[in-house]
Image (tube, rainbow, N blue to C red; front, side):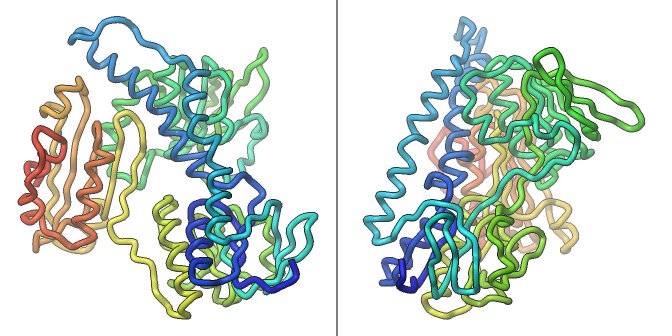
Length: 448
């Protein structure tokens, strides 16, 4: 390719694909490159395949909760068949994504890319490409672990492709990945342990509801050990022995599989950003509030690769990609609006959050905080669920500042609070919503 492209997008995840199509539609010459199959983490190695596997765990849990309440027998997961169910979604994605890009006029390229100058990249084995603008949307990768034996761990991608599920699984780290996968594995019959070096797990979520999740996790058979510093992972009779320390005492846990769930970092170190004068901070590409590199203005970044205020979530990556290319196209300085972005830990049941934590809200002034234990409500009673709760935070003027939920189907219900926060609605206005009955949404009026 000898002509100078208007835009080269590095990373064919949802942020990059959305941005590439938008610019091509505007008449720009656009190419996109990725060394991995098109679709990105969410569609192929994260959100979507995880929820496909979770469907099996949900079915098992639903049957167990209603055991003795009209449901009999002991259901079980056939892991290889569940994996085929997952693959029925993931396998067609790369070809479908690439076809959609071609139809939109975007040239798809494959291979590892690196910058060779401020206006050029090189694709391994394919030569250089000149560009007017570039969008870095390379996502994130597992954080490097530095204890002996760390190479024995598998990452989240490997877990989502396991042909068989081992009997004993230990997760290192107490974040989204560990808890979500642990809840799937436990319902599939595995003996599960989570080792976390921190005192508090899932610190971005309401601590009262996290405590409720921890209780529910333990009830599901998951062992959770906090303040556990991994010392090493070693071979042990065809399996693994994880050696960890709590306070001043050393412990071990035997596992057939050890999974890295200890965080992710921007995947940018292979790009040779220095050749283009691109600065980094907090591990990501340094950007202005409008997602432009201050040191290399023709370069923009979006999603997990950017050191922006946005959370590492797919919807954030998508709208950051749209904002970045809009700023390229119009030469304006539009900033992303992160108001009302919800976040969910897809355990069983799920933990959801939107807006401020209680601690953040109280630091800003006088607020009203209402916590409701909803475990005895009809919505949970009909499912046999024992743990559920909601915390809603409102300002003095009644506007909703934050909502925190733990319980069945609350991942859907949190979206109503997301819209309320986005639009600046008050609790009184939300309570006027006539909801279908009986549904989870019909509970909202009683939560304020």
